[in-house]
Length: 62
Image (spheres, rainbow, N blue to C red):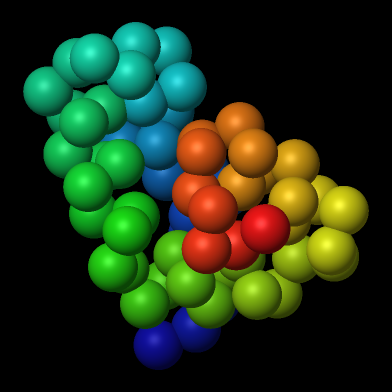
């Protein structure tokens, strides 16, 4: 499988542009349980992970 491509995910980009869009909401729902996203978040340095978690309101990664 390889490294998750979460940093350049098209769905994540849709969320960043318009969180209320259908694809944006789908990404946000998906990110709550996605093993790739979890792996990606755990691979980040603590400061970067915290900044992303705060931006997406994902308390489990704080």
